[in-house]
Image 1 (cartoon, rainbow, N blue to C red):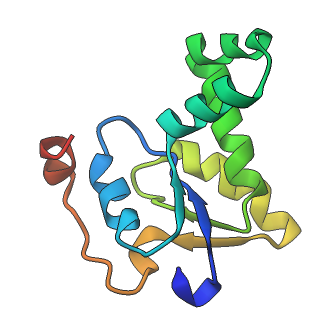
Image 2: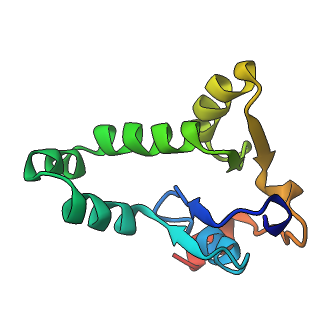
Amino acid sequence: MQDNSLSCAYVAYPPLSKAYYSVISKANISILIDKSRLIEAIQTNLPQETYNVFSDPYMMSLLEQEICYESEIFIYRPKISKWSGFVVEFRSPVGMRNVQFEELPKWKPLDEDEDDKQS
């Protein structure tokens, strides 16, 4: 990630996959944002009418997918995430860069059981 000069990253991950956030947090990115920080930023900077997105999981998911769609680089796990597949499906035809999580340098794969233990 440092090779791409990323200074900010949004990490959208299922609640049971906090291990991935932990791996990305070691990438030395100055601003690392997850869902809780996104909610905090919206509550701090936007009108209260926008808060209803938090109570609707579908709307929150759409917001996160839009953030991921608009990103400079989208890092994803294709084998376990259909959600990410939708983002890649829309990004690829317009030439946007997508990188599989396992392709990152120094990536040590976690098995599915380990994901559950670390949540």
